[in-house]
Image (cartoon, rainbow, N blue to C red; front, side, top):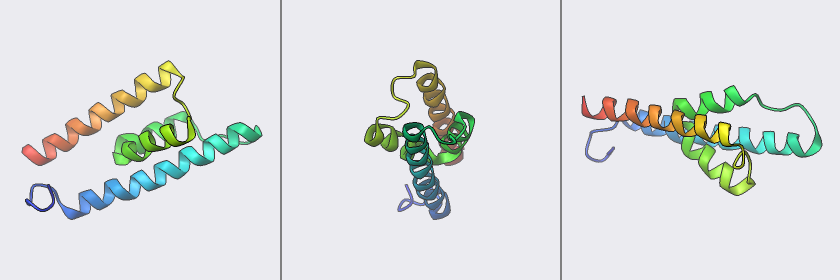
Length: 94
């Protein structure tokens, strides 16, 4: 999409950056869950995913097996993915 000019390089870099940050947020939360330490709020994880970090969140969920069994979390997570993708599609095609 960037090569065709439909997507700004800045938008792509934003997704990459947010995905990396979100991956590390999930990693920190998983570590905190194991050590019974201070946790990252779920709404923070959702917000970063909604803003464009959802690919990093998906990768982190698979790598760390974190938040994969919580049905309500997964429902909200996938809702944020759909909303984000809808917004991106509107940005690209409108």
